[in-house]
Length: 304
Image 1 (tube, one colour):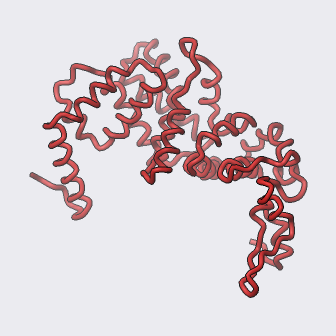
Image 2 (cartoon, one colour):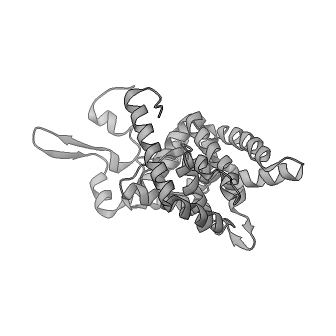
Image 3 (cartoon, helix red, strand yellow):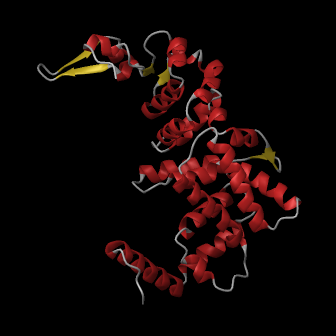
């Protein structure tokens, strides 16, 4: 950390709208860089020479997009001009730091707008290269839309004060490359269960080389993926066991997203929706939830 006067500090900041100081003695705002003018104009602008500031810290490319979408501001032309040609600089950033930025971009309530801007400027590919490669393709003559449905769902949940988990979003962002690898594995003689298991290893390994993802989130994504094949079966002998699975709700929500995106799982989604409305299943779910709450409260397994 480098310390100094306010005048020293302000020029080290990246965005003019983030370089305002508040004087508690006279309740005034001190503005060295025209930040108030930019706020009033709805403008995101880098302090100093934009190209040089991006080269100093390429994460600023993502911060510009994040603040533009979060505030609903436009990006100043001088700040915008170098973005596309400098996107490759993100490959120099440690993958763990990029994951922090991904969370801020996609879990801030404006995920759809952030995704669209990232792709517009060529910044999504350095973060999720496998996904970008598949998104450019079409399936059955239709564009792949599951990612957009997932991001819309995330924004809606945040707006409604509902919890969201990065693991669910990671499962959606990597679903298309996973499916491509699963098809390849099945063609090589693996069962669907084995194909998903080994495809998950490959896809997650490739992803973490670009944007590191903590294991607790990749574990959630894996469980959601692995449950999809089980949810598609219509001849399950004990659906109650699957309904009682701790990750059932996330996997079911993911199945619904797949149906909305046009995948051939609408019948399975309707079946699981009906099952959850059955009186016996509702009673079972209440009992299971009671057990889990008691276990969290006491720290001990509950035995009926």
